[in-house]
Amino acid sequence: MTRPIVHEAPVPAPPGAGARGPGASPSPSPGLLRRALRSVTPGPSADAGGAALYRRWWLPWLWMTPAIVGATVFGVFPFLNTVVVSFTDAKPLGGAYDVVGLDNYRRMLSDPDFWLATRNSLLYALIVVPLMVLLPLLLAILVEKNLPGIGFFRSAFYTPVLASSVVVGLSWQWLLSDQGLVNTWLQKAHLIREAIPFLSDSWLILLSAMGLTLWKGLGWYMIFYLAALGNVPRELHEAAAVDGAGAVRRFWHVTVPGVRQSMMLVGTLTGIGSLRVFTEIYMLGGSTGGPGGADRTLPFYIRDVGLDPLTGNAGYGAAVSVALFALTLGLTLLAQRLTKEDEA
Image 1 (cartoon, helix red, strand yellow):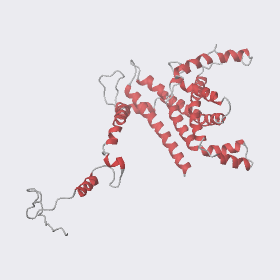
Image 2 (tube, rainbow, N blue to C red; image 1 turned 90 degrees about the vertical axis):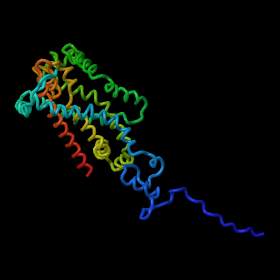
Image 3 (cartoon, rainbow, N blue to C red; image 1 turned 135 degrees about the horizontal axis):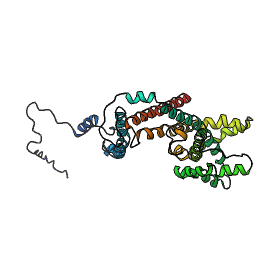
Image 4 (tube, rainbow, N blue to C red; image 1 turned 180 degrees about the vertical axis):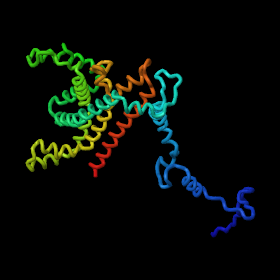
């Protein structure tokens, strides 16, 4: 049997649901409205998938807020405050101060103690940076091979990194004093007659501080080079050996190009650290920075002229700090330029 065809009446729409007055524009579809909002609101693209579709645009900024606040409070604000203070005659303990304009910078440029500290800082960097770039690389090559007991030597070379700078400085004081282990051993071996003034001669204090910096940093940068050496293909060494290249030629033509980026990074970090050196000079040269302050570096000089509660001038110390920042920034930009030229 054929079923009779029943025509159902359409269900009436709710009042006002589809009613439009004369001249009313049609309401946009939900998809069109969503695309319009995405075009003006930051967020994932329309073709994004997965969790990105449900992620709010402000969520990454929420996670970054603690870091941004910390960098602003402890980095940006102190830097800007230092620049402002450098144009005043503020005192270390606070109080009333006057704006002196560029007087602090004029005083700095005519101050022989400032130039002596700048010379010591630059000399420190010129000697320490090349050695710190090369010696950890040689040390990393030495301990790279998987030999029995090599883990002990890797740990031993890294141990100075874990020690406090003050503890290391006290140890070197004991080693280098007139009655210390070094002078005692050299005298008993009849290599010297009188004790070497490691801690009283201005040049020897500076060189001893450089040796302390190198000794403490070798293990740290050795780790950098061990990671870089693992990315150098062994096939290159084997091919160079087949061509008759010796160990020295393989080092300069295979190893060094393979770790060049790490060398640039180590040089940049070491240069910044050398310009900021303070503890080594203080521990070996005393609170005066060597005899007559002859071994003071720029951070040491900033402490003396800007932070002394009785005679210090925080404004002048801030001006020297700005000069140290400019010097550090200049060396960093130079290192970046050399890196880009090397990549080109």
